[in-house]
Every structure is written in C-alpha cells, then in structure tokens.
Image 1 (cartoon, rainbow, N blue to C red):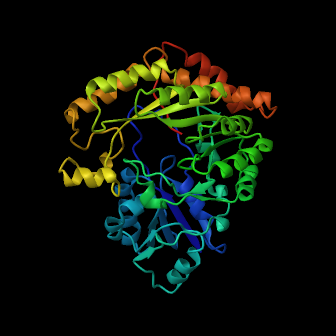
Image 2 (image 1 turned 30 degrees about the vertical axis):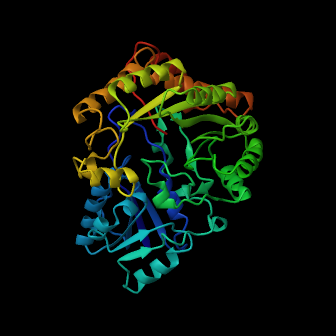
Image 3 (image 1 turned 45 degrees about the horizontal axis):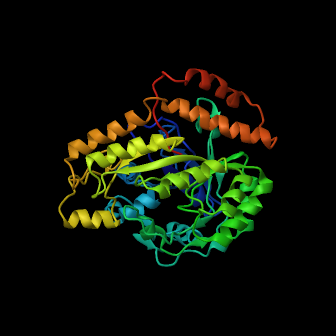
Amino acid sequence: MKFRLIYPRWQKLERQTEFHLPPHGPVVFAATLPPDWEVEFIDENVESLPTSDDVDFVGISMMLTCQVKRGWEIADHYRSRGVRVICGGIGTMLHAEETRQHADAVFLGEAEGRMDEIFADWRQDCLKPVYDFFAAPPPPEIIGPARRDILKRDFYNYKGIQMVDLVHASRGCRFNCYPCCVSYLGGRRFRPRPVDRVIAEMAAIDNNRLFIVDNSLAQDRKWEIELFREMISLKKKWCCHPIEEDDEVLDLAARAGAWYVYQAVFDTSDHIRNRVKRYHDHGIAVEGTVLLGLDDQTEDDIRRLVDFLQEIELDLAEFTVLTPFPHTRTFDDFEREKRILSYDWDAYTADRVVFRPRQMSPERLQELHAYAWETFYREEPQNYKMFKLFKLVVEKEKADETFRPRRRDLVVRRFGREGGPGTVGETTKC
C-alpha cells in the first residue's frame, strides 16, 4: 500500500534568502507509520506534486498558518478523485475546524503510538473525522528517530553548501511567551527525551551540522548539562534556540560543538547586551530574532533597537512583525479589541502587518520593518554575514578534524568572494 506524504509550499519572508531546510515534522511523522506501507514524500517547496494520483492514502503535513490554504487545496484535489486524506501538523492543530472541511480525517497531537489505529480504520473504511490526542502526549521514552531516508538530499543545500539536519531533544515548553502558540500545541510541561536516545539519533545522522529545533534548551539545567556532556564525543556542529545563561552550561555547549544560537532580542537592556557577549565569549555566534510591533514599541524604540543590534555585534538578525496566530494570547487580545485587520491566512507570513498596532499605523509599522532590514545590513550585507557564519563552522570542524573537503563545501570560498561588502544581501532563517 502506498502513502503519499505532502508538505505544502509556503511563502518565505520577503527579505529572506531562498533556501530550504529538510522539514522536521514530516520525517518525525513518517517514523510512526506502519512498516508495511510504502511512503512517498513530496516537499512542494522544492519539487512539484506528481501528476499521477495513483496512491492509496494521502497525508498532508502543515507546519505554518501560511501553509494551510495550499494544504486545503491539495486535500480537495485528492478527495475529488476518491483518495482519502488525513491532515496533521502544527498548522492543522491551529486551524482544526477549518481543516475538517477539507479532509477525511484530522489528526491533533503527537503521532507516536497512534498510527496503527488510524491505518486500521482506513482499511475498514471507517476513518474518524477527528483523532484528538492533545490531552495525552506520548511518553518521551517511546519517541524514536525520524525517518530521514524519505528526504531527497540534493534539494537541501544553499549555493552548494551543506546545510543542517533537524533533530529534537525534547517537547513541550514551560514558558508561555506572549506571541507564541507552543504552550497550546505542546503543553506547558517540559518533556525531555532520554539523553541516550537523543545521542543515538544524532550519531546516526549522516551530517556533521545539526539544528536542534527544541523551543528552548534552557528548561532543565541538569538534563541540559547531561545532554551537552554526551554530545562532546559526537563532534557535531549545531545551532539551537536559547541555552541556559550559566558559565558551566555555556562551556559544555561550546565543547559539544555549539555553532550559533537564536536569541530573542526584545529590548536594549544590559541583560540582552551581556547575554550576547557571553555567547560570543564562548565562541558561539548569535542570530537575533527581533519582533516588531509590540504594544509598548514606539517608532523611536524600533530605531534605537536596530542601532543597539549593530552595537552589540549580532552575527545575523531576522526581523518579523508581530502576528496574531490563532490560539495565542495575542490573537485573543487583538480579536477582543477588534484590532485584527485580515483573516487571510496566506498573509500570516510574519512580515506583513495584519493588525492595528497601538503606537503607529499599520502602514508605518510595515515601513519600519523594511527600515530595520535595510539598516542592519547596510554596512555588511547579509550574504557576507552568512559567509562569516559558514566560515566559523568550517573552522570549528577543522579544529576537530571533522571537516571533509567536498565539492559543495568548497563553494564557501567562492561564496565568500562573491558575498563580500558591497553586494546586495538578504537574510536567512534556519
């Protein structure tokens, strides 16, 4: 039996460099499917959908709000031809009621331990409209390695440069940040996977460069220390979201191969200044994730923030606009206050203003978003900053004697020459 798993295309940030990382949700989901099914994976961001509809069952994995309308269109196509469709993923969970109108079944929650039931229902032609496992996440002990064998590797590089493979070491998040929907999706309880299972999965990945996609590794210091200590022998190079602000943890992270971190920069405080400095002191680069349009931000605040980012020497920065995604406190507040201007989910790309800001007009916030990108990268274009970040990882690999000169890695040299100061640059997001 043949199962076609589809990851719909989505609109990248307007100023984001166009390259693609291997999606994580679909390969994690694929690992939970019954072994007697043949799995065909199509990432519509890098390839076209097959013209043949000769499949038995279709799954559509949607991560982002701006993917859902395309996902519904694909689902409608297959259902019109008599093929059963199941939708899942973060985007589906945020838009479950709407997605039910386009799918034979909607899956809510995490997939481990659930798929045998669903595929048995498919065989008996009695799929349930909704499989709701939100309230009962699987124990971390049963989460196995993702099925990266379904990926077509040649699609996932940038200018010939080897990119990262995605892996997760935990689920859930004990934080409840204002614009974030993670507490709704994964729960407020931090659920770390057993360290030995994480290390085994990382060791088996045929890529020296990883992106640990956990919402934050800074949630359980004892577990974090154990994880980094065990990672040292792998000699992998990796990026992640924030690490515990602690000298012992940062030292272990650096020894374990930390390449760079994503750090939310929300003000011009000494706390942020010192945090970035401590990363740099340990040889860890920083990409700032900068959210514009918060209720307390004025135009002058945004201008000062951009100046501050240059002052603290961020290695990269990505500017997004506050977006009221469903099932966030932001959405609830803005809807109650009648400040949402558009419910066109295609516009929820985090670089388009879809709400009425408190301190300025929507049009002015859109202009300041462009100003932030242009000003931050004016002196040193984004592709040159990217080159320096790739140069850093190659230096780390050479120090560990894990750098293997391959044709696609040698492109870094040309990229450096072509991407020097004076060329036009954009930004990227891992």
